Image (cartoon, rainbow, N blue to C red; front, side):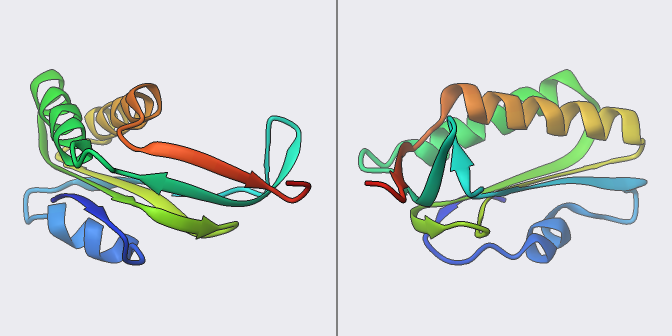
Length: 128
């Protein structure tokens, strides 16, 4: 599952989408909107996918992880729209037979997401 959604993300649903009888583990990352950034108090964060290409970037990241490690499946779900502090903006789940490959692939997907940031991110601070 690779998705861009404006709906609340259920980590359990993302995990269920990748696990199988052959899975020894599902390594999962849940990204949250935190209350500060660059030393400033955050009120909200907005993610926009105006060109509609974000899902392609997420698919590329997932495909690369599959090529680098022997994983069973990977899912990436990214929420767009206005998100408040504490809300989930990203869930990455990697199913694999062994934890080392699962952790490596999950770390890779998170790092690539941060580097490529497939959506436009705008932070709103408490002081304006």
